[in-house]
Length: 115
Image (cartoon, rainbow, N blue to C red; front, side, top):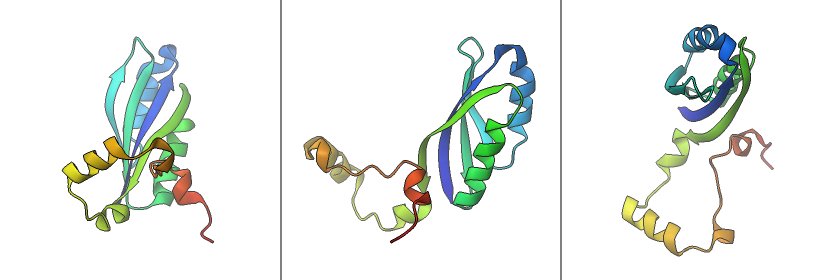
């Protein structure tokens, strides 16, 4: 299972149309919306990366959508190998130099060809 958050900017003149269309896209749920800021946060929960990207592309091509960008993406498989408790993870975050931290929340991490 892949879960990702998408930040969507919408033309206010097409707000209702865009919201209704996005709500009908498979695997997509609108988590937060702010019409005044012309923004919403959508969650994609898809069985695999291909369906996740297909949902993102559907959001991007929805009439009224100015932009839709993936903010974070997590793959269930990556959590299966995690053996640390939350407290240990927090301690590592607080004590590890920033240049030693590897970020895996970018969807591009999963799209790069394996060597």
